[in-house]
Image 1 (cartoon, one colour):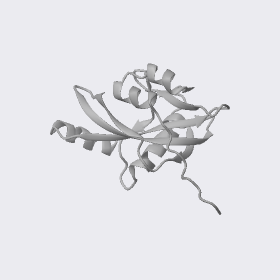
Image 2: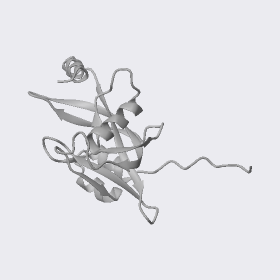
Image 3: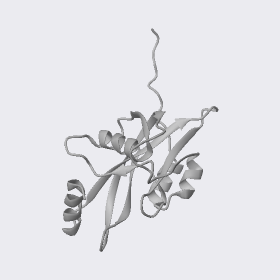
Length: 158
């Protein structure tokens, strides 16, 4: 068990809030419509977004970028502002703990054919409405279904 997970479990036992970071990988299809990537969890095989524990010395955005590469095999640009948050109940060995997750959007520029968790996960590109139907966590489902990309900054005259 990673040190950050052990620390999170200790915090949970004391009743403190524990946090994770997540990425919603996205791309635009040929019509310009957004698609999001979901991955299966390792144990229950449910569809989720890549997520993990904060990493010492790394920002939440950077940690979410690393999780997306490890769990979904995607590389890209993670947007600075979080897209939102959601909470879920994480199953531990002998209890459930509530986890608050900060979610970042990751604009995919490269999809790897082979990646760290390729043998343990499946991935799928879906329209946000379809992805939302497959996600069990209600708050994450709503976040994905109502996903809006930030508008590019307006460029003034040269």
